[in-house]
Image 1 (cartoon, rainbow, N blue to C red):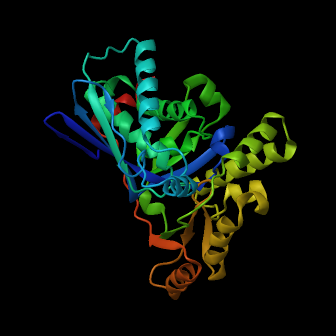
Image 2 (cartoon, rainbow, N blue to C red; image 1 turned 60 degrees about the vertical axis):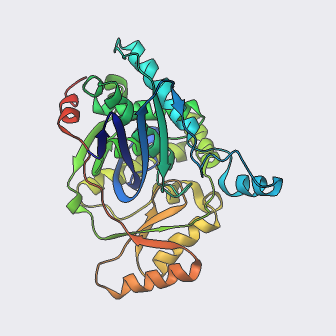
Length: 346
C-alpha cells in the first residue's frame, strides 16, 4: 500500500487509470477491464490539527490574481474547479456512511491538503484520484479501514463526485481502489444484490507494451455522456444494443480474444468526440498502432511492440502534432492485508 505515516501524519497516493476495454458500459450494467498506471498520481496528506481545515492548493485553487485578465485566462484554461470541493465532498460522504452504519469516529480534527500531476480532463481520472487518496487518509486516521469493505469504497468515491454533479461510473474508482489490472462485472443482478459489482484482479503481465498519448488542453465530455445516458434510460435500441456489444468486448478481453476497440468510438460518433480526440487516434493508427481512448477523451492508449520501428514513428508523429507520448508503467495492486480481509465483508 502506498502510504506514509510519521508522527500521525498520513499520506496516500492514488494513481491515474486507463479504461482498457468495455468503457463506458460500467454506467449501464456492463463489464470493463481497467488498470492503474504509475505515470501520474494524486497525493493527499492528512495532519492532525485543532480545527478541521481543507487546505487550498497553491496552483489548482487560486483565488489571488495579478489582474482581471489573468483571472479570465486562468478560468478559460483551467476552469472554475480545483480539489478543495472534492476533499470536502468525500468528508461529507464518509461521515454520512459511518453514521448510517454505526461506525464510531473519534473526536479529532485534521488538515487535508493535496497535490496532483494527473493531466486534467485527459480521461485519466484525476478527480477521483484525489477523492480516493483522501478516503484512504480518512480510513487510517479514524482506524476504520477494517470496517468498510474494499468493494464498497468505490461507491463512496463516486457518491462524493456525484455530490458535485460529476457524471461518472464506478469503473475508474474501482481501478484506483484496487490498483493493478481489474476485470469488473456490473450486472444489474450484482448491483441490486450486493450494492456493487464483482471485481476480479488480473495478472498485469498479460498486458502488452502500451503507450499513453494525450493532449495538454483537451475538452470536457460530460455533456456527451448525459445525452447518451438519457437515451439509454429512454430505451433507445441502438444505445442499449451498443452497450451490450461494448460490455462483451471486455468479457472477450478477459479471455484473451478481444481487439483494442473503444466503446466511446463506437458509441458517440465523430462530431461528439471532437477533432483533437480523433486526431490522437488517427496519429496512432497512421503508423499501424492499435489505439483507443483511456476514458471519455483527452488521451489514448496505443499498442506498439517494443523494439520496433513503429515506436519511433509514433513518437515522431506525436511530436509533429503537439501531443505528449510516454510508455505506460503499470501500478500493481494496492491492497494490503487489512484490505484483503475486508473483501470477505458483505
